[in-house]
Image (tube, rainbow, N blue to C red; front, side, top):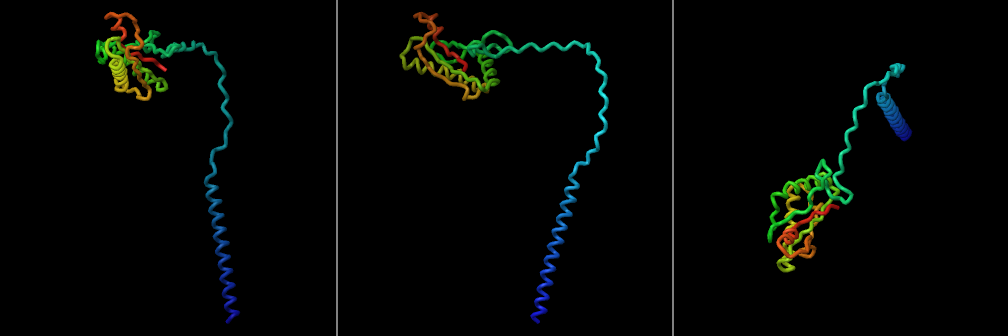
Length: 194
């Protein structure tokens, strides 16, 4: 009985090895089939067609398009798009007001377009006042003027990250005079490109 058990155990080992050998063979046949199916079946290249004889081209080359003018001068001041005329960067305000003049809206819209098209550019907006009023009041008024220009640009699609404001109040007058004409020139916001 012990001999027949050993014989039975030996047969099982042989059967296991035979199954393992069959699986290995089957895996190799399947792998070879898959690889054979993945080979390119591109046709053999034929002889290249002869090149046509060169002919002289008598057609004149089209004129080169005119160079588009730069959007900025050497000091980073923007041009009116399509021209070499500098775009207004100073916007004036009425006495004790922060309302942007309707006359300035077209220029501010052009600034917004330039900034939207040049996302790497930014502007620094300075708010200014005339000498009338206290220092604190004028600093606050200058800040509100700069903020009005900033709000307009943002509403026109300019990224807030491109805009920075500062107020100088009455500290940096454009005109040092002490009359209405000088005061009118000092009530302003200035855009400085960077």
